[in-house]
Amino acid sequence: MNIIKITDSNLNKSNIVYLYSVLGSYISDAKGRIDAAIDSGRAVLNLNVGNFQDETLRSEIEDKVADVIAVSYKYDFFKKRLKTYGLNNLETELLYSAVISADLEEDKRFVIRKIKNSKEYSIDGVYNFRLGALKNKWDEIAGYIPDYFAADQLREFITYLIKEKKGRRVYVENGKVYDGRFKRLMRTELLKSDSDEGKIIKEVILSGCGEVELSSKIDETDEFYLKEYFGDNIFLRSGYFS
Image (tube, rainbow, N blue to C red; front, side, top):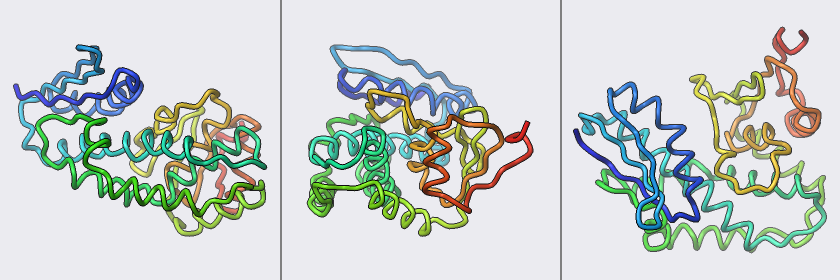
């Protein structure tokens, strides 16, 4: 068996929990084993698989490691640097989600180039020592965001992002969000938020979609902000009315 190790600081063990959740099915399909542990003060994920030369599996692993940096670490970065006022607590979290989503795929491609075909993925090590150019870009973006950010400005920003993603749809059913391949999206697990309020709208924003299909009722807060930002790009299936 070949072993790939993914590690992060114990302070960021929630990132390893996320990877355990999203990679489990891929490792199982490859007839392998996935184990998480704390070792010498670090959170560790061991992936035991017979053939890591499988490019599809390797790509999935690196895609999800890039998720951790481009969502979790970026969230921490902007939460420290953006000291905006004018929004309520949830809207501030939606602003963070929108900023993350704005160039998420571009950020992930940059990270993947830096970690491609590694034998061990030290997430905090990559972030601290190999992503200077990416952090410089984030710092520049933070400088463009005004100190005062009103709710209508947030709506304009998010609706602009949505128009750029027109045609890309996610699916919401029983409080869970799925992509076009019906894989569950769980990026909100990477946000170190103090509240689960608005979890669906945050997940939808982080997906980078332009359309949302609802197959069941959702929380009133999530529904309010979905209507506020997506408007006519929300599609209701029969399950929503039952």
